Image 1: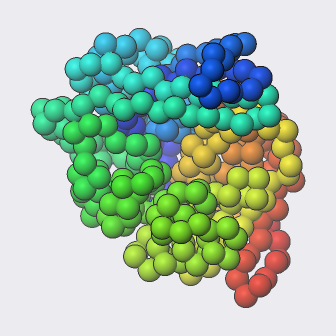
Image 2: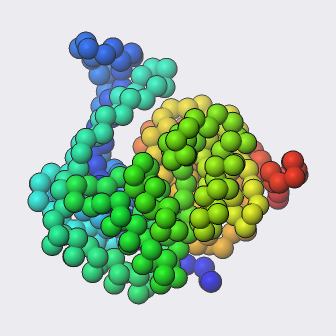
Length: 322
């Protein structure tokens, strides 16, 4: 394996994110929004933006409703990525995020477009053409109508069989099916991991046990994000943990996607394990201190990295990893 800047991000069910700020959300009542923003998003699109900011040569693909492509195409041009999205009939969904003064975020996620067999055939052809020239693939987000969890898992499995490194970040049924396809890396948060095992995971030890069981399924890298408590990474029967400094939280939107981008970039650049985890954790911590997704300041990132501790969790070890 050698360094690479080339990566493909796959967003099967992108969205236009409508974010509104308000003092307090009152259910069943009229709520007045003080400011709002509508922008192209979706987990894989967010990952692509961060990777592009880091210096990656990014190709984006997935499915876009042809009725409202403009904001997506503007973004792709602005961040300098290669657009291989398949246009399908209908409109890409709009997801609403309501941010209260106390930092509480309410997500209202709508269903996406419905994809036809012809759309699927076109996407598959593009995906496996890209596999001829790319090693890293990031599948991120939910699935639109017409794409079953099993079909998504088949794509992951086929890429894996071709020796590709597939980073997979999804939830619910898609995550369950995708795990059986043995992606190279998954990044559930503690809630998604709890949902997967069917019971609340309330401690680091419980999350570790659940993740190790997934490792037994043949997944090489299992990264568990635990919000302000940091990130745990299980690889090669070893645990590493990273904890960032306390951040002033402006918005947690896109923090998980930023973590995925950081993990992907660290591997693409052949950072060692502690360096990769410190970099990705600090990048994600920077994300919660800003509105919008992307790398806003290399200097601030370096400052956060200096304050991010990385340590082994094995044999109750707490040694700091340089």
